[in-house]
Image (cartoon, rainbow, N blue to C red; front, top):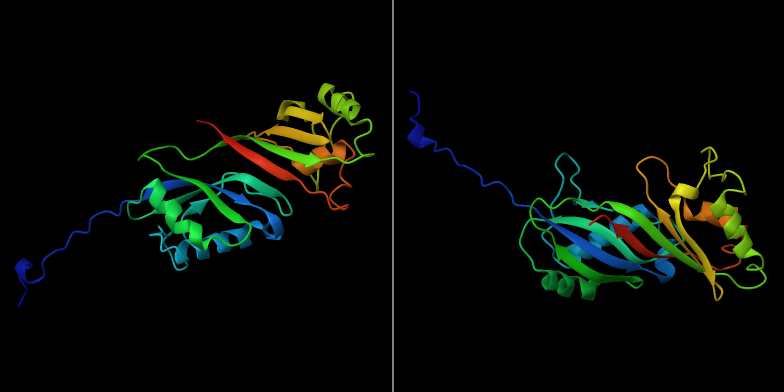
Length: 224
């Protein structure tokens, strides 16, 4: 005999509400020597220990829904990195930071957390800023090399790997050398981009990292 609909009531699941959070953090010290994948695993462990209600992808191997608009290269410190994370329960900005702080490993610090309104567009980086101390005698003639790179007289810039040379001028928002500190602000394009170490090589500063001097990314700027 067929069962009546009342014997097997249909249950309706409420759609899961996902809340996107934008987090700014620092990656410093020895932590700069871990790659992007290791950083993702480190952050996931931190979020689990802090008991954040993480949103996960679907499929056989679900992973936390987190994105990094501008991943940081190995060996570079980051003072103002950005990531976005999906949560399945409401938390305030202050609650998030209070939960995360005690579980941050050495070299990782959470600067801010912002719960984004529904429908808010994802972070889209427009430029990144770096700085590096340049001890003497490496800074000798550096202002002149910067000027030649900015006005194009030094020719196309060679790039890492098998990528062809490029005219970097549209992507070089600012290059300065003051009081022994070299700073650069690089625009981010949807087409081609210049890597910070390519700029160092074009300015004959690429040997500094081998000498123990390292790059620091000071800001990831996004379109508002």
